[in-house]
Length: 355
Image (cartoon, rainbow, N blue to C red):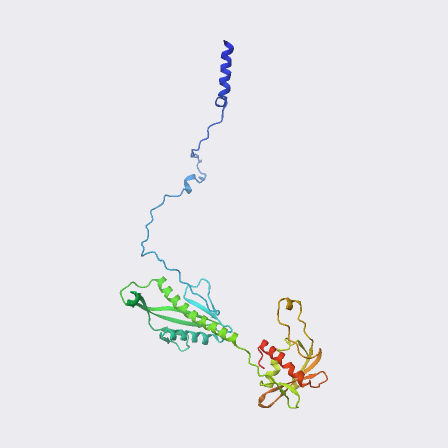
């Protein structure tokens, strides 16, 4: 009987062993705040609640009238000659002189006047230097109705001042637009600072666009231009075959230098007193890279490798004869000189020389 009781106790101990012998304390997720006792005279450390986020305060929602849905106004430097300065607060743009503008101040002034003339808006010069202008009234209207019943209703009108400020070196110039006056045709609120800036930037962008359109037209005209060549086969005063140009002697002398590289001619000596170039010619080779890139073959002259001379002489009507001689000073034949004409014309057009 005693053995059965002991067995029952042993089995019950084994079954409930986890709970009987588990000494691990139960984890608590509760965060307890510990208050430290700080001795007198010592600094108190930061307490946990010092960085607590305060409760949200109710925010008053703005009305539809207070919310601006307009995009920000930006000056658009769309012309190749225009640029902006960082942190610019005014409605201002800078123009830089380039091949399309030429003299900068006359060019910008011309474009400014052309823009207002096209828009049929009055533009008055207000200074003697021609750098400050005031516009007439620029009316703005809104469209109402639909189809055949549409009408334009005038809303307001504005006037601007436009100031040009060229730098002393003449290579850059700024244009600044300032709103002078605003009037409503019907009662309305005065323009705020944002609206004033938007009006100024809008006008400035339209003037910049006028400059950009003119630059594009000029670039297109330049690309379409073909260099006029006055060079033609003829004879010099001695009756020898030569190439004749309408340019004066001194101009021809300086412009010939632009052709030597394309024609594969190297200058070994020259004598300006008798207008003679001493040259060496080497026939060019097309080369590997020129072949695989499908570039045109280099220009070749119908002469052999060696030394030659080009002698210039003055003709009637201030024209110039270009005579080709061999290294001994003998003129080349008429056939060879006439064959030189075509590659020379090609080189003149490629270099933009005045011959």
